[in-house]
Length: 207
Image (cartoon, rainbow, N blue to C red; front, top):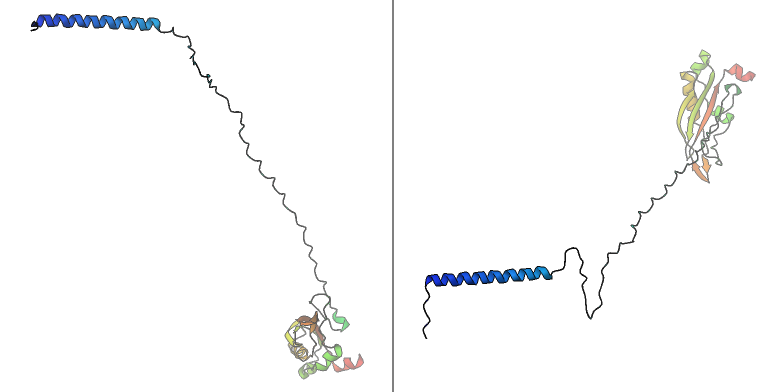
């Protein structure tokens, strides 16, 4: 069976009719959706059937922030006692005594070197003839060191009485025979002082 052929005007009329019917149906559906939707501002509680409802709540953390450890207590500075400096006793020499003065700078408890007394020094002393002719006399103090082997080291004039008598005093001290000092049974160096007396023969005889 052959379909009747529609002209252009009939096609346009059918299209317009279908379009209007579609718009009317869409409007009806939209109005129904608005009518069935819940009013604004009202909370709709979800309904869960057959299962327990889980309610999530925000729990504020009660954990306290750990405070930083306190700094260590500073250690007070230690005050050290002041050291007491003990000076060695000074040895004063009186030239009028005419005796030998000995200065021992070794530690206490040691044995001092022995170079003999005044007689030993007088036996080593040579009076210069030129000093005798000139009538020179006096006392000469000589410092020296007695070595570990008993030798005389570094003799120097501490208090002189002229070039002639000074040289004679140095020669006399160098000729001395000494026993070295000892510390804990070991020989040690020690400093000594000798006074060489130069007196004219007539004064020595009268003394």
